[in-house]
Length: 309
Image 1 (cartoon, rainbow, N blue to C red):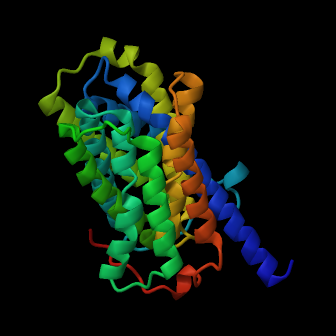
Image 2 (image 1 turned 90 degrees about the vertical axis):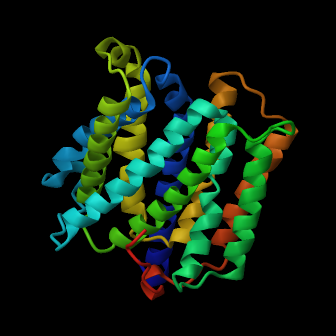
């Protein structure tokens, strides 16, 4: 296979992995809210994080089957990098989770998705270049998310401010993943960040919430959905995929999370999308296509982004 064809094949694979990641994330919003029917937000987060860590833990050493092409990469600083990712993930995911207690799923989806704007802004502040077409794609994605997620009569709810803080932390997380996954073993980074975020969430749950085994059992389905698919699969795919992708491009693809969330609500819960929603989905698709057109320089040509949030 010629070099251009090999590069195009890698790009397509990376984009499909990120699209699958967004699809899983989008399907998890309802599970996150349902999980809090019987447990507190920190208990839910701790349960799903530690379940995801347990699922991925064997990959610390074992790389057979579909992971045979990803040998263990020994590097200095891997543990510190994983702890940093875990700290950022702990803050981001719990701001989102606690915020869901005070706002709607649609508002949470839109505000969380604002990291598609924050990522290129932070990149520019860090000295990296962002092309005009990426800014155009970001603008399309933002308008699309608004039409898809926010109803005409929506108002600002108390939980929206927590979601906004979460969006900032998600932007930092996307940048850090892209920066660190090229320097350390991505699967080990995944294990470490889940363990750190899960352990910190467990401590927060012990301090702030009543913990009931019966409540955890009743929330078992939502915990399994969020732990196995969202944490064990999707966040691991994110770390793998972003070894190849520029953070701004990744954020645009991840913004399709809102489309999958709306489609899931339409198919499973019977929620209406309407012309406004489908128009927003169309704009998000246009944003992804614009980001693909005349791709930017390869990530190796980018100026490295600072590893400090």
